[in-house]
Length: 282
Length: 290
Image (cartoon, rainbow over all chains, first blue to last red; front, side, top):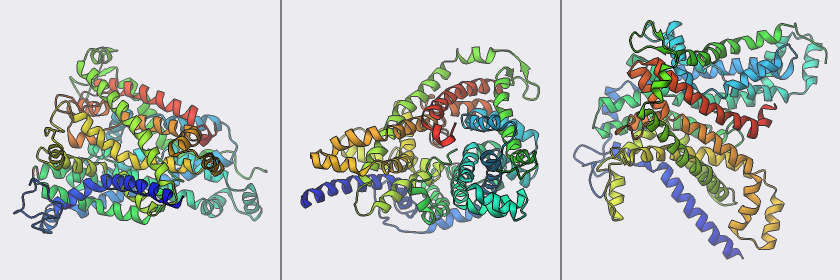
């Protein structure tokens, strides 16, 4: 009996190890290439995973030619701004939808719900024209450029529904007690209710951050200045800059991945616990 | 409960979100239809009203049919794989075995890494003298131009999308598996049912709603692919890997033909909205408590 269980587990481990390797192998191979010096043929057959001519030179080379710190700061500004606006706007809109009675509540609810069905890719052309019309592009100035990168993603239905759900879970007595104690509705929202929905705010923040950090389509449409590039746009640009220098392209791609890797490892329980998947997916 | 707020307070709270949604969702939504009746190709600053000419041109354009066909191949290949493989992995990982967290982290890693980096990594694997062609020759097959041969390019890109999605859907399935009552498995064990019988009779029926959900979510995301194609093939060679979002992008921002691109966007909109409607009405009703 015991033996049967163990043998079954061995097959399970074999499959899971193989899938794990397939998941990380493209990165391993990229890392391997990024560490090979000029005297080593990166197209050698059979391929060498462990570099013969080990060097960090590709990293320092690409670091000096490409403004990674700039891309990183731009990405931080865009992702940070997107997260802050999503938290504020979703919480503000979610609260009355959960807790107040007002005329047009049903219509508001369905209007928000209907935006789930509209893919950004299908409406991006008018979004672009509107952004131009509002002068929210980097040709005006950098600040306008950042606002233009952030605003189309400042709030979405997933966030609003997530927060609405969170407010629905708070007992009504909490509100009543706060009102009896003399809170007005804004103090109630800010000081009593928001602290109680912190777990949902954290989930919203983390998933919005990941989404915004990886966004590629919108910045590659609106950005015109290299100084405004976010990391994904900057990394894609490496291909043009170093056309066939795969050592540099590989080193640059790996460098650009380090921040999000640290973020993921620090926050991994939010991602792999399974409680939050699909809660916030743009 | 007594009413503790002014009757306009709810509107004040909703206003900021409503403004953003109005400017960046609802107005663009209606404008997409409007733009599809305009011709921008002669003068980008003063488009001309041309009725349904863009649609007429679109439905006579063989490239458009090619692009639609490619998009549906994307669906037909990626969706079944993304509905089945992650479920199988979730079942394996949902056992009392060592290293579960490590497996989950490694399999989830492609999900969080930027699609641009993922696409570059695969471009390198697919290179003419790359490691994939080495492996292919090892097992006695002919090396191929994975991204340069029209027969392979689309499938090579689809593999990247699948590779990047497996971890995401696996975690969704894992959450669903936790809700299957343990007693049912115990009953199976007493009856001496094997691995496959057990999961076919207990697991699959129980998590059918999740399977349906994953199917529609992955179908919607397959309709929207862009970055993989932009980074790896630019839709080529010979439009063989061009899908609808990429073609919209190309017509709008490279050919500056916004009207024509909008007509295509309307087609995309209708397809995705149909999928989403099914999704919301059938599988996510509880989430939104309609």
